[in-house]
Image 1 (cartoon, one colour):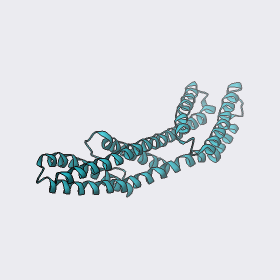
Image 2 (image 1 turned 90 degrees about the horizontal axis):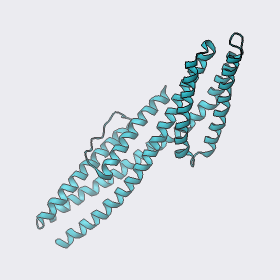
Image 3 (image 1 turned 60 degrees about the vertical axis):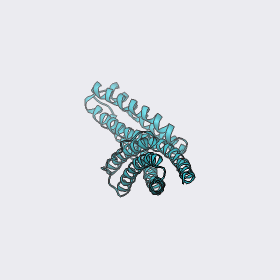
Image 4 (image 1 turned 45 degrees about the vertical axis):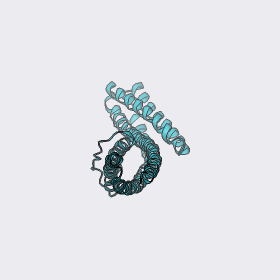
Length: 255
């Protein structure tokens, strides 16, 4: 009986370590995707704020609007670095196209500002503004949307994949618990340790499974209640962060 118990414990440890390593790698990937989606959302917000400010500038010439435009461009540049780091290897051509479109759009904005400042009373800034907005709507805006859509799809796919893996791990953990209880009649001390460890793992994994199932069905308000450290806890927190960003991104795309 003791030998069987040792074999079960060894096999369980190997299986658990393998899955936890995979979970850790997936956590990193999900975190990167979440960061990329969030950065893309910040870029969209910065572009919108910039577009509102430049639209008002030819009417007022306010220096506050120039500051607002500069701040929006700073936010854009900071988040663009994140987007480039995360999506650069997957979509290099799209990123290059966005950079080219962004440069052209910024030239439009600079021309609007220069035109107004050179002759505030009689200028052509309104006409340039129309061209800039048209260019934004036809070129830069759609390309930014094309950047975020694949990331959202990948997030959903990763959640579904992890749900299946979590189901497998939960099933194995239950089987290990049953064997531990049976063998534990002889080796009570070992059984107590295995039961406590396995039960906590099952509850944590089941909570993640339930949350993943809810998210895959479209429920973005479900909270993951896992009070556990280590890789399992990190995985739960990563999925919860992903859920929050996914909900915000979906709401942003629906607007």
